[in-house]
Amino acid sequence: MRRSLNSIRSLITTGALLALTGYASAQQAPIQLAGAPCPAPPFLHCPDKDCPPERVINPGPVVEMKSRRTYFLDYPCDLKLGEKVTFILSLHGFGSYGNWQRHYFPILDYKDKYRLVIATPNSPTRSWSAADDEYLQNIVSSVVEQIGKENIKAFWLVGHSQGGLTANRLLRTDFFKDRVDGWLSLSGGRLGGNPGRAASFGPPRVAAAPATAASNSATPSVSAAMAALREPPEADFSFIYETGQREMDEKGLPETSTWVAKYNCGSRRKPEEIIDTKAGYVYDSTRQNPPNPSWGLLPAPGKAQIDVYPDCKDGRVVADVVRLDKGHTEGLEPRITEELIKLMLSAKGGKIQQAR
Image (tube, rainbow, N blue to C red; front, side):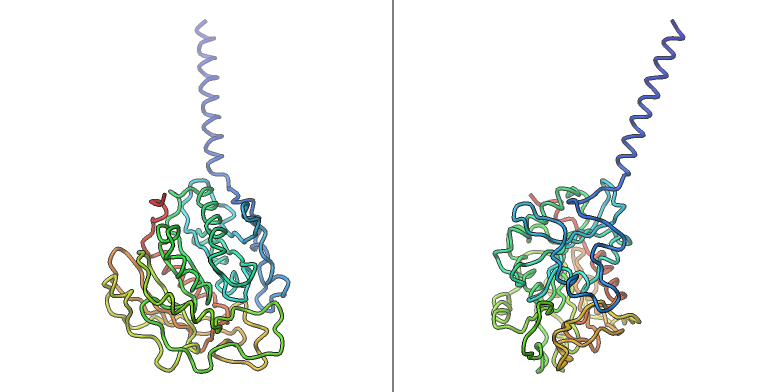
C-alpha cells in the first residue's frame, strides 16, 4: 500500500513538472503578430540600391480586419509572450507608399537589436486625411491587444513630410494624445518654430511622374495644413525633428522652440556628428531629370548633426537632427537611423499602459 501511495505521489509530481515545463515552453515560444510573416530578411526588403518599383509600391501583407486595408508589420521573429517592446507607427509622405517609407527610415533593420514592433500603413489615395483615422486607430488597437499594453514600453509616431503633418494632427485627437509618448518628424514640420524653406524647395517639374514617385509636400493643401497646425498640441510627448540641410534656407534651424520651453530644457550643446559610409535605400527616382538638391538627389554616404536639448523635465527628449548636404527624399543612412532609434528609446514612455 505504501509503495502504491509512493507511486501515485511520483506520478503526480512528474505530471506537475511536465505541466510546468510545457507552460514555460509556451511562454518562451516565439509569437506571431496579426498573422504577419516574419522572414529574415524582412518581407519585401529592398536591396542596397535600385529597389524594384513593384516592390516599393506593395501595400503589405497584413489585413486590418475592419477596413480590409493592408499594412506592413515588422517585429522580432523571436518575440516572446510578455516581452517588453517599443511600438512605432510609421507614416509615409504625400504621393508615397508604405514600403517606400519602410526603407526611407529603415528601422526594420534594427527591430531585433532594439526589440521594435513597427506598423507601416498605406493611404489608398497616397495622402493622409481624417478619413484614414479609424484605419490607423484599428491598427494600433490590434497590435496593442496582441502584445498587451503592459508590455509596450513606449509608443512613437513617425512621419515623413505629409506623414509628419498627419502625426501632428493625430496628436490633437483623443485617441492618440492619450497614447503617444513621442513624435519623430522626418521633414514633417518642427514644433515650436519651423526653419525657413530653401528658395528652390519642391519637386522638379516633369512631364509625367510614374506611380513610384516619392512624397511631395510642396502642395497648397500641405501649406494650408501647416498653417492650421501652427499652434503646438496640448498633449505631453517627446519630440525629435530631422531634416535635410538643403531643405532649409541659409538661416538653418532656430536656436530654440516653444516645445523646448514647455519642458524647460537646457540650451543646445555642441552637436554630435554622425558619419555614415553607406547610403540609404531609396530616393525619388522620378524627380532626377532635372535634379533639385533641395528636393533630393541619389542616395549617398553622408554626415548628420544631432542637437539635443538637455535636462528636459519629466524625462522628455527634445532634439534637432540635420543631415548635411541632403534634401527631402534621400533615404536615411544606417548610422543616423540607429542614432534616432537610441534617442527615441531614451525618452520617457508608458502612456499607452494608462490609456483606456
